[in-house]
Image (cartoon, rainbow, N blue to C red; front, side, top):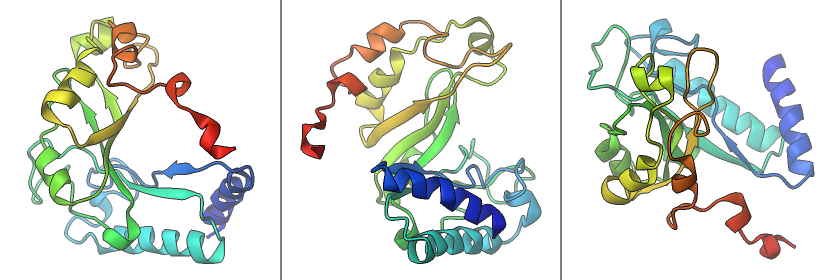
Length: 205
């Protein structure tokens, strides 16, 4: 609860400044690498669901944080079922429609195949990709040869329900960001991509 209060204090500053937040708490819960993930409760998603629901109720009702858009963000299932030792399906710990505004999973694949897209669509929420990059540890991520222009091409042809993506950052030894890879200018100048400077803010005034 102390941690929730610290987070709420920061989000309150943003609320008071008129900032709307895509809030993505406890991401990749269907993987086994975070304390809130499936490893701590591999046969029952209820502990995660209860924590997520409590957080939303607390922030909304007690803290009056009406500036949050709640994003449910599982890891790609990579074809794993719910008996895997390290991953679960993307809907395994879904908190429920009343608690989720957007579904945006994470995906690191050179060819941008979203193997869970049909499942996401069936969940009937607005969709995004909350983390996007080349295959982790793959050659493109090492040498910056990932063709980023394929992002919007793939969305247009295969994943039309995807409304936004977040390109993950680079760090030493890994080139995941747009600017660290190929053809980012072509991507950002594609007519299907809306950049900050393309957005008309006058309706907020």
